[in-house]
Length: 244
Image (cartoon, rainbow, N blue to C red; front, side, top):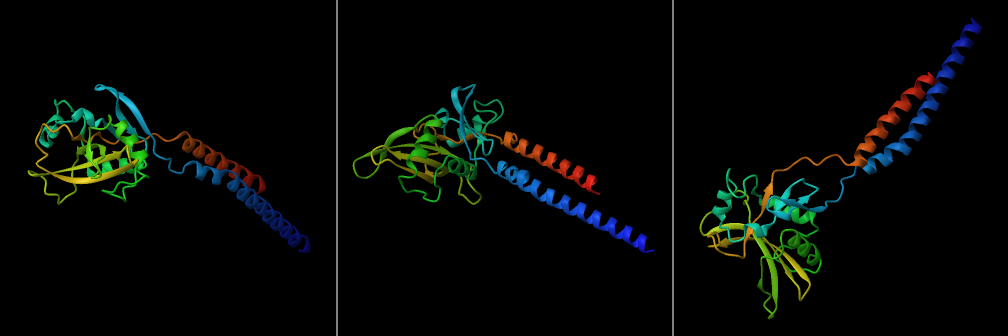
């Protein structure tokens, strides 16, 4: 009986020691593999990529964060609000695109590095991101904005789809504009309702036209992290079986 008890005790101790070694191995492996894997799949910072389209070289801008492709605003300048809607219908000049929502335009601005918390205010921090985004979207539509001190500013503005409750229709039409002062080196983002500007013929406004969202492809870092995780789980399983 004593021999049997001793054998059982030794077996339990051996098994317990094996599982402790397995646990320590698992913890070390997790620290070595899972932490870097988690860091690798952190959301990447948005990048704006200029692309070609049937409308010409560099007439699309891809926001890698949302997967949305934006058509140059300069291509729709002088289109009235209803004209833009007609042109995006099947068979229209902008078929395959749609008028972006106000929220989508604001997200684009944020992804481009623009501080959307300082609406209607020129700030130095917004100068570079505003001018960069304007350049990507075809360049400024006008150079005649009045700073009020005798200097002018450039601006690009376009129609958008308003949030619910906006009094859409003549004389109010919704839009968002970018403005930059080359003299003061400041930039601004505006949300506006244009009285009477819905009619065609005004060169100072275009439209925020966008292709529907596409799902961004998994990043190489994310795929690598998934592979490392699967490898780590396999190693833990094999080690624990050998210790059992």
